Image (cartoon, rainbow, N blue to C red; front, side, top):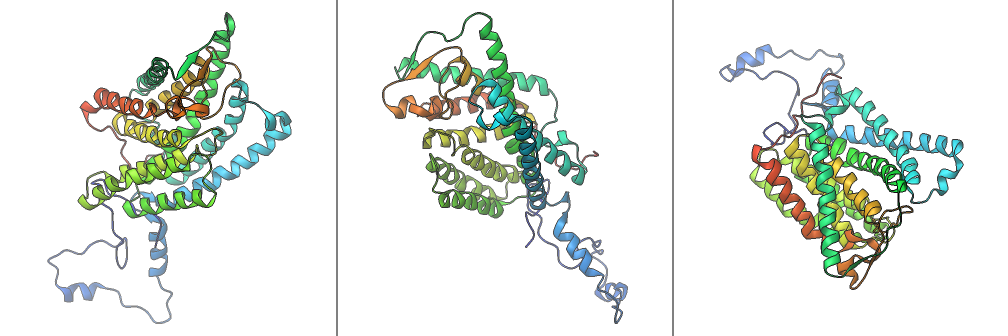
Length: 399
């Protein structure tokens, strides 16, 4: 069976055609004998002309290169460039292997996967005859959505920190920076977390979400989620693996109902189930993570998918992601996915029950993060949900 079947615009999955896949359909009123007379008779000893067309159908669908092959090519190209750029970076700057969790260290480390993602995206876009911006990076009002995301990310993290402080699960100490250093270090962290957001959103909400949405159904989505969870279990799970399993189970029933009811545009939500689960899984290896933080990462990944659906691009998600990390790591000085930064403005320490404070994970590991994520989703729906979906169309564009 070929990788992911292409979705039609009405959200239903196109079934595999029988016979010649690109042959024009005959008029319904034509008699069977007339159709039989028009069918060319095979010539003895002639090569089978149908075989190449069948092979073409395996790779090419109604929207060009099938989604499964596109993902495999993109992953292969990304890994190739990542290894090449890593070798070059170590040769030019050997200290990169020992960089710490400082703004320059994060910026240098994130630059390598960012360049690899851009290279892989440009390569696949060339094959698919698309613009790179077509992978959920286009749309109208991109700058406004980005700024709105920045505001939302800072506000949401501030609400979480405020709730933790009110409950005495977070305690503030003296400021760690003063004078011009506040702005200098803050600007470096802003650049670093902009790179982090571009890497992670570029992977999960841009290329992968767009590509899977145009060519996945429930069964392929279920297979991808099961494969990801199985791979995680084999690798002993890491920190907080149960957060991934919980996110995967949470999306199972809604996606199955969408499949049964053949809801229009359900391919987008099947893809969101996969990308959100993978996004949570991407955080498992972080030091100090717990299952709540991993589940919260998958949940906010779903919120970012909703933002793509409502705004037509990933720019709101990129802004929100960058501002959330910047506020948590630099401005408030809390742990971020288990990492404590070198160089932050305020100083905070967790206290009390680790389930409420987040412990070593930071605010993302607190149970209070879950209502904050729901609050962020509600605000997103209130602001952008009135005008209906602005999801980008899936047709190929010249590139």
